[in-house]
Length: 109
Length: 252
Image 1: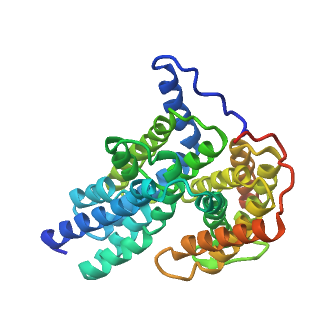
Image 2: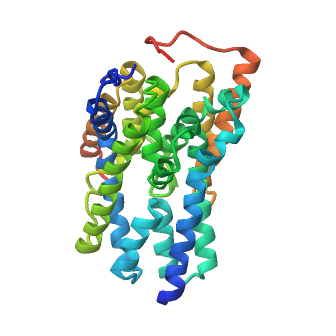
């Protein structure tokens, strides 16, 4: 791609992405603090975080892998248990990485 | 409260600001470990797509969105047209509007000179740590400082990682699985976000739908999961008034 269109592309995507990021931060004042809005927004973190986590655990290199050989799934489940009990991000991280490395060294890939 | 959280506002001088900044950095630290390899991967992909160093850095500096950047690099290498690439990138970045809506109650009061830079610095990880902190710890006068600490740490990591990827041109850390630190940290944050039956339902629904929606283009799985999860949570709350006592005390 030649320089002209390339930088036009970068500028366009930059602007569009910025609008998306700023959108509600800018518009919220108009929406006011409406109780229904707050009620709905309460669920966004849980839904978004789950939407980010689950695919990362059940997909390996782009393929749905609900098999025993999916170490990330097992490590994730273990870490999930630790997260549920301790609610500590650090503990979850340590448990998950240790589990992953242990499983990876045990199962020949 | 999540372990390691502390009251942040004592009301005098610059100390609380510094504390807020550093707490932001500390909270996002585990995510930096996982994101750095992605920045490297982008740097490599940009070089493989024959992008100039300036174009690669421009993407990291201006677009500053990993998934979209990777898609852009690959599509340029494949010879796609500007319009197709732009629409693909923006579709991938649609989820930022969901984060924006979620953060709006906490940040919309800020003046433009804060809101615009903070908006530019928004990423999945910055959103995750910020919203978690804001829901546990009011931090009324200091939210933007906390966000800034986390967001700057992420931004620096991303730029440095991109440079490293451009220079090194090798795949690093994939064998170590360090990128697994990202979903693991999100998992830890998720445990903090679920405090009653309705939020649990939101999480389960969101996770399931997102997993099923992965084949969809433009990372739409995240938005699909988010919308479904929110809907499920609202339904659960209204129909069943489901809530069980949180496992630790939560002040809102």
